Length: 326
Ligand code: ADP
Ligand code: MG
Image 1: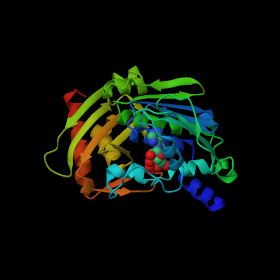
Image 2: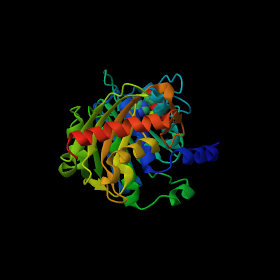
Image 3: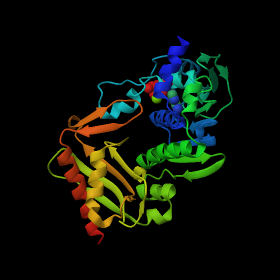
Image 4: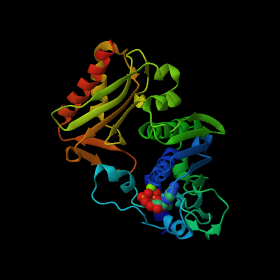
């Protein structure tokens, strides 16, 4: 019933950033080349994600907000599939249960645009709408009908911090997608979608950081890691938080203590206490050597051979720093 549904929704949609994550993933799944995320009041007052992806027909729209519906075929629980497996076709449905959700979409392949509003779990009628090809999803009044959940939200600044982190990760992981983040009508960053990691980094973190990066590019011969690539910062270009240390496994953003520690180890005692370097590191790992914790809110991975993985990453980063004379 509606109450059970709201509680379940609260379990998976924790805060505005979780909404943003799901909507951005949908845009990327829809093969968008441009994704614009605009939030108001840290995302608590509103979240809007616009893309130029494949779009949806009227029938697609109706199906998209139903329970357990996904147009995505997900086979085994391999790492590539986990992002969509997180909700198993539940994201739009659950978001619609705890907010006022408006979706406008028009198929890129032609045809008219349509609009659908879901309020507190009740879907309205699909109506014609004059919208450009692609999809716009708007989420307002998040948790208006789940006061307990709403009470757990932090300040606007903190909620925006989480949103910013999510959009930053996806922008860095997808340099070929033009990603824009706006907060209260002001642009926070905008990437060009050129496919180039360095210019993406520049757009996201600014010139001071981007100019202090060293390229990592290693292909370990043995062990579960076949490639480590990306950018890491000079030892003196650091921040107090570890959120600037972004790791991806087989293209997907993950949190993995092993990878973080391995990067820090490469710097040895060059880092000041409680300071963390900037890093965007992509590790390619044979899928059967990775364990994924498929909790929808986290992307936590473990490796069968933690030590071997850690050593490979430390070696790759240390070599890059040494090559740069650091
Ligand atoms: P899932 O992503 O797991 O399939 P969602 O609830 O997130 O579940 O989305 C349901 C369906 O709605 C998707 O399978 C897709 O067909 C459609 N959809 C959602 N967002 C978009 C989008 N931005 N562009 C095109 N189709 C979308
Ligand atoms: Mg989804």
